Image (cartoon, rainbow, N blue to C red):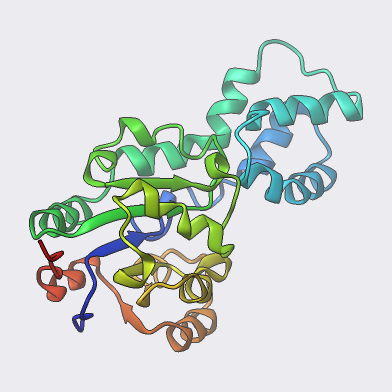
Length: 246
């Protein structure tokens, strides 16, 4: 990857960029389908309600995701038999947990190398509170100077506020001196550019192989990005960052 003069920080998307739940999730598993089956809910109606609440889930930690499902059950008059809520909570975040707690060794090695070279590192993730409950217990979390979770800050990418929330968290490095790396979901690459990042980099390593996105969609994102990488280790070509003047 080409060096970017004047940069000293790198911000990453989390899911499908640093970790991929698809490494663990069976192809037949869809969490809304499994939750609806367990609770005896009409699938199509539940999926519509779940999709409609996405912007709220992404930008608030309360009520929890499980509490939102409980509220939905009350609204539609469904009373699940027995104590099923522990299992519901597991279904809602099982494979996000596994991905966060078991990152690929190559990803950890790259992040450690970047830190050792002096890069400031951050994460900006669109997520509900259940998807990132395992974050603080992950070997990943200690490698970052800042982590911005949309459900905690109240803004989701591509809103500029989501990216700008990094600045006070990672030592006031301006976004103009930072690079953004992501899989391109939710318009995050164009959003990063609008927010003021020096470069928006498309990481296609996971999304080119996990089956979640078409080859055509990935091709469009390559055109949209300033640069594309297929392995995070390509970031090591950046060398060491510019140092602040004393």
